[in-house]
Amino acid sequence: MYGITELKKGIVIDVDGVPYQIVDYAQKVMGRGGSIVNVKIKSLKDGRVLDKTYKGNEKVEAADIVRRKVQFLYADTDTAHFMDANTYEQFEVPIDITRDSLGFLPEGVSVQIQLYDAKVIGLELPVKVPLKIVSAPEVVKGDTQSTVQKEVTLETGHKLQVPMFIKNNETILVDTRDGSYVERAK
Image (cartoon, rainbow, N blue to C red):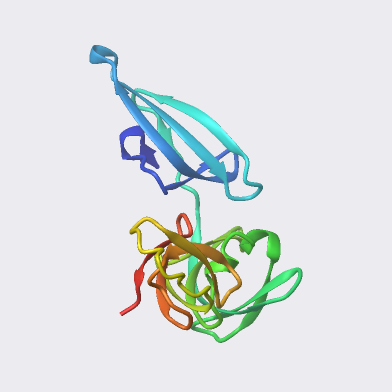
């Protein structure tokens, strides 16, 4: 159980038997009346977003999420294939659950998988992932302004904007939260 002041962005709570992740949090202190917490929560089962308000000394139920370390093997048209890092058991996950993450998952990368009632409900990616550039246009002489960017294709097929000095076959770090370029991998 969480007190309302213990709620933070990223925490998973149980609302009517459904796991929800807090995506936004705002607290108002009301003098003698205590505090009010407004949260925006996203369902980990169907992606629905709700706004909830908690007052005073209410308690919020923590969701019983189990996390397991797994290795991404490959994806095909309707499933993604993983292997448990401890038991070496291979299993499939419907592509709908992993679709947003596949652009940041090169084969062989380790991730945390979230289970609720023994069903996979999501993936927890590392914040930064190293990915190799497989296609990058050549720099045109004269485009030396610092804000000029170009679109490149990564080994996963994901496309993103990077600075002009990045070349083909380089490895870069990508922020998995927003899909942006961070820096060259060292």
